[in-house]
Amino acid sequence: MAFGSIFVRLGQEAPSLVVAFFRMFFASVILLPFYLLDNSSERKANGVWLLTAGTALALHFAFWVSSLAYTSVAVSVLLVNTSPVLVATCSHFIYKERLTPSGILGITLTFLGSTLLFTNDLYTKADWRGATLSLAGAVMLGIYLLAGRRIRQQTSLIRYVYPTYVLATLVLGAFVLAADLPVIGFSKDTYLFLFLLGLVPQCVGHTSYNWSLRHIPATVVSTLFLAEPILASLLAYWILEEAIGKTVVLGGAVVGIGIFLVSRSGILPRPRIEVAAAVLTAGGKVWIQKRETADHLAGYWEFPGGKIQANELPAQALVREIREELGIELKECPEQP
Image (cartoon, rainbow, N blue to C red; front, side):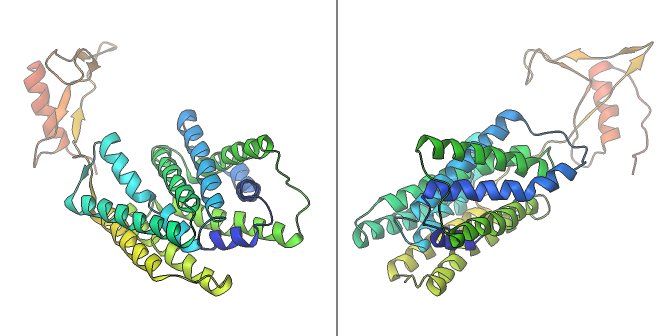
């Protein structure tokens, strides 16, 4: 993924929106055979969340690729990778996950470090557009990750990423058409770098990132994700001969520490509540009951059952709940392996 900004710079003969479009276009073409050969039984992603993810991804690349025309690779990649902090903040309000003291400190440090990088651009380049566009890209990346989190709970990797990439391609294509930008007439080297942009950081990098979320704890993935700004800055220094100033190093270190704190221990998930329910049948009928007015979700219909208490097996919980709710004694069944 660290090669993304390098290939963007090397392909900047094309306008920024065109670069972003070709990134998603080539990624969609490369992944098409994998999508057609997929025979998984998992259902398709929810259309609303998929549209949200595809549009957010398109806007993310539109903003971020554009930022590289106005600021350094180091500042651009550091700021766009503040998205985990934005995701943590949104999760606090949307998913009711609690911020820890480490999370609050991490968010504060990320804000201070971002302010330092933003101020550095104002003083050294007299231009605020690069930092602003990169932060806008971080916001869109955060929305993309939140939507992807919902979709990946029920959808396989290829059924998530391929439609998302295609939607992002269509959105970016619409932007290119609306702006009347050229998509032909560039040098062979430019098209090569645009192809590599779709292959290396997108198909290999972003797709592997989405794959790993189902197999590796998200905190580990988010921490490894911090390597991108460091590697991208070193690659820019080596390939593009782009100097890294002391202020950028300081601001990057503060941002990195902030993201690390948020990613590792910044959020406490909502407490998990385990319940047991019974489906009671007799004479072809099924027992259901309406929740009482004072209960959560009052008026909804439910099967009898309830919360599993501490040191209680699900079958034991059912026996107790049926006794309490219906006055019926059930013979406890042994736990199934």
